Image 1 (cartoon, rainbow, N blue to C red):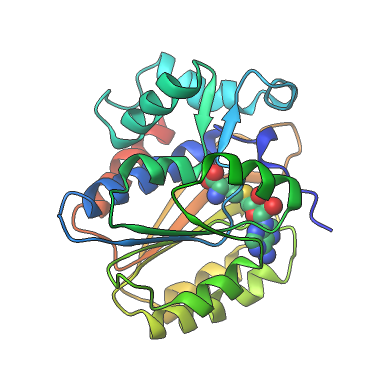
Image 2 (cartoon, helix red, strand yellow):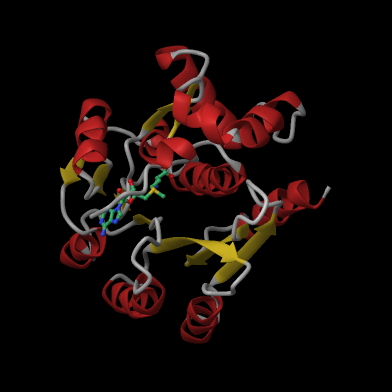
Length: 257
Ligand SMILES: C[S@@+](CC[C@H](N)C(=O)[O-])C[C@H]1O[C@@H](n2cnc3c(N)ncnc32)[C@H](O)[C@@H]1O
């Protein structure tokens, strides 16, 4: 039974980091006219309201995107700001886009999107805003293994698990190795939490070993609540687009101040 609900965490410091890099990759890939595939294994509901009781309860968005906007962490023409502006113009000033709506901002006619979301309520909410994509109510890894290599062959796969199933940490290096073999030109992106108990560490070591040329970026931030185990987050990017390493350094620097 899945219990994770991203509405409590949308727009937090981990989301800001992940979505800033995701939007930068999408902006780069869509700058060329060639069509692309966009795949997500763990899509969530796609659209969040930062004035909701869930966001209020944790205060995570207030410490994340709301603070970042107030303090101009990102330039107004950063790809994430452009996607956020477009989503707020359409859905209201407290709206925050999940990764599917960030992708939606950049995708063009001719691009193909496949989104997996297993949780029934999250999937139902996603269906309301994701008419642009093929939706899959199935395990995201099963979907990705079945579709890869996708058509068009050029493209991006985002893997953003909730890590509710602890076996994910063991399984992910094997899943990614298999996906990379099938789709050697795909930009494969994994988000992971940095945890005080270092549960993530063997997974990241295995990924570094299997894919020495991958970009690995990490940021640290204070726990959302005293005693909370997440103290940062990371991204592994196979086949990183040109310029992404420099963009990752710029984003990392925002978290150092
Ligand atoms: C961290 S959230 C996704 C957030 C989203 N990618 C974003 O950035 O806006 C993870 C989502 O994965 C879903 N999920 C958990 N296990 C899954 C699985 N095996 N396959 C597909 N979705 C799953 C959860 O219901 C949750 O909505």
